[in-house]
Length: 218
Image (cartoon, rainbow, N blue to C red; front, side, top):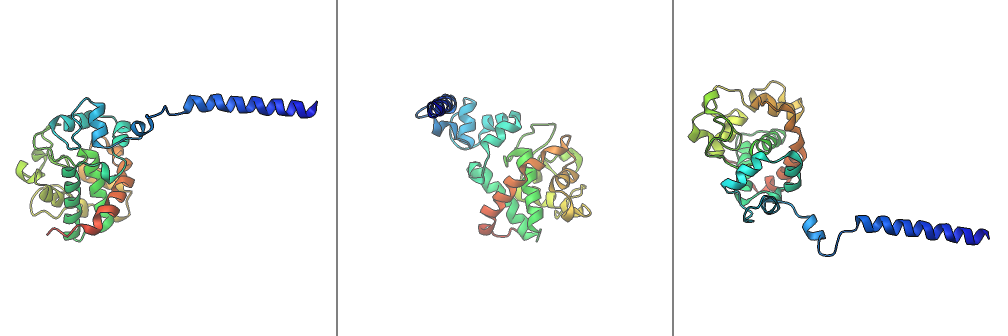
């Protein structure tokens, strides 16, 4: 009798596990779609042509997307579009050319990721903010032409440009030992100071992947 009851209980447990498993099972053919991410996934989600490159419509949608959706779209550096990846490499190259430590390069990458996803905005989206760092001509970051030149705007962010009235990275006292997100905010003075930190690991992975092959940009 005891053996029979044990077998019965085991059968009941097995049946319950089978039911639970069926609830969470991925339908045949759906696993690839459910694991997709990147620019093409984002474009498809928003009914845009899946080009993998960021056009004006995609850039606008990125500006309006939630953090959760952006984290789904951008999991690794490979999820950036080709132009955006090239812009990220420019940020790294300028940092190298200015002898900015890797921690400073990570902070610059975090900032650009939060502000623009490395899209070089040539026309204002928020007030008069432009470029990958969303710098504003009206607040002393330079002319629109300077701000929308990725190498020049990177120099402004690092604090090594020969123009501008705002403190850049290296003008922030003690930046080397501050939490990276706080340094981003100290330079940018954003209305959303806590949002930079979420991109720290992405920025570190991006630098580890791309940094070794990027030449210094003087």
